Image (cartoon, rainbow, N blue to C red; front, side, top):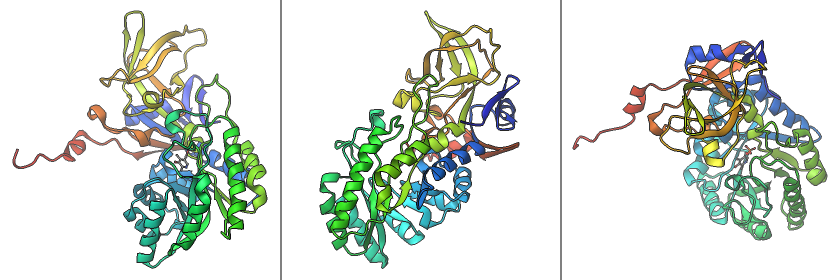
Length: 421
Ligand SMILES: *Cc1c(COP(=O)(O)O)cnc(C)c1O
């Protein structure tokens, strides 16, 4: 459920007409609904209310400071995967004790940043990383709380580019070797084992892969406790999917996910951490774009938008499907004809949808991509020297630009022509 609804044929973001925002900030832009974001965070929080837990928003899904501040003030923790994201979480006011640091290649500099600034735990993904962390912690004279990310060799049944829990993926240590790794962790100075971490992938639409992974984590918890490790936290990762296509099956609800967690690991008495990103932010954001031209091709028609693959890369990168809707609702009797919805970038990959049935749209008409709040703005680039597009936050009838569109002068000023040229 989200707060982007039509009223008398006009698309609203909460209490604000989307067309009004377009007139104010220009297209294309991202717009987020605070109420939707808050609602999704709360659903996870409630799904785990049966025991001690922390919902750590995966900052990489949507990392604007205003969004992080909103979630942080509700009590959310943050899952960060870089020094940059750590800085964002802190700048948004989230205390270190609510930040977990994940990622397969944390540098010593990033480790220092987190240990000095405060961190709930670092999720260690390999032995070399664990040894480096031990050295960094000893040099700083502190103890680093760690969980080891285990790779449970479970098929998440999602797009290959976002599956992370199979043995061939780069993530975590093989679960079969976990005992050895924990034994070394206990021997190394400067480290304190606090738990186990697992994350098997993103956009999962079934519970079965989670169940398989969490069952293995439960067994491992007992084994490691038998070996003398104080396993008191389980970080179960993120990955719950959202319905991008209305017609497709509906992914499990956070409540069902929470019940599954209780069933698989609830008996262990551990504090539960989860790291949802997409389900919190995905349906809380729209990408709004204007039609530049409606073009007739050979046997197919194109709708050329002012948004492109550099603004929303998911269709080009993951063959992702986004619902595309007119900002001014078409009359029910309007005929729908298949069009290819494309951007102006000079690549055939700059295609958002093929043969999508849409009502008649023409120059200047506005469309909105639904479910664009996660892995949208954060993955944007400036290919074709297209400025990063603005982000707007709506809450009730409040509207704020939370990231402004850069000017071309600002963009060009980042380049330097050497004196000797
Ligand atoms: C990407 C990622 C997440 C978030 O995944 P979603 O599918 O957005 O919920 C959580 N944890 C880790 C370690 C990740 O890499």
